[in-house]
Image (cartoon, rainbow, N blue to C red; front, side):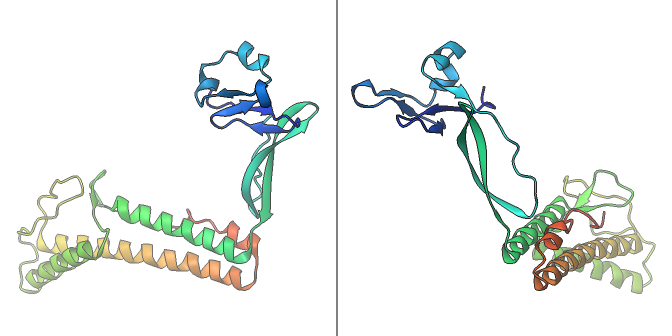
Length: 222
């Protein structure tokens, strides 16, 4: 029921989509219906007052068009969905694409760095505090390596986002893991910049189709 849209006609015969409480008729014949009337009504009750299902039309799929909203028109005596669109401006398309790129970048940073050799384990790298903590750990592990303790067990724990510890790492292995983590973060940043540079290049050419064709989901490091 909730996936079906309904419309009725106003006193002038124009169709309007029912989205909440509604009224039919005018003057002394005016009847008001609460917002839950559609959910509780039967097909017979809807038909009796002229409430009918809207003939749906697919939302426009042309990526160069911005969908502004939808309405209802008369089609051979039945209400039919209409869509209001306008062409994307280059600046609007660029803003839309850059927001999508940021969402992809943010989602990957929020999910964390996948720890090699430990399926399902991730290290948090969401903000500057995380980066400072990992850089500190890397620096301390490097100092131990430089001091001839590379193969000694690392006394500094590596805790994952699941609140578990990666056990048995040497100082050298800890340093290497931190290098991989930071390289991963740098690769994410670089790909974000590369995608935004591609958007700016297409924007300079005022090529809306080229802007929207940039795939913000592709090319990210695993």
